[in-house]
Image (cartoon, rainbow, N blue to C red; front, side, top):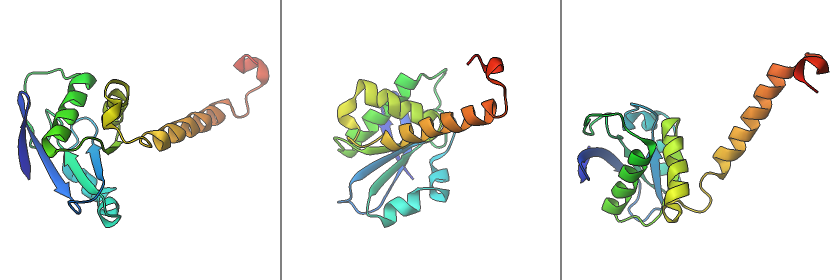
Length: 148
C-alpha cells in the first residue's frame, strides 16, 4: 500500500501494471476499499497492459476520514489531486456506484482529465438498463394503466 498526502487527507492507493501502460483510475462505491477491484476488473486491466491506480476515497480503507459528510465534488477533487500526484494528465476511469458519480463530476468539471472514450460504455449500459426496467414494469399492463 502507498499513501499520498492529497490536500487535507492521506489517501491510500495501489499502482498495478507496467509503468508505460495507459493510465486507468478505479473509483469505488461508498466505503468500498480499493482491494475489492482485485476481485473484479483489476487483473484483466493489468493483463491488457494498462497502468492501474485503485484508490481508497476519503473515509474508506487506508485513507483519512475527516469529519463528513463528503460531497461528490470533493471526492472528484481528491481523484484529480491523486492524478496530479501520479503525474497523469488524463486517464480512463471506471467508477462503481458512488465512483460512477465521481467520474461524471470529473467529466463535467475537469473533462481534460478523462480519456475521451471514457463513460460511453457506462452511458450505453445505463440506457439499456432503463429500457429493461421499463419493459419489466410495463409488461402485461393495459395501455390505459400506463397513460398511453
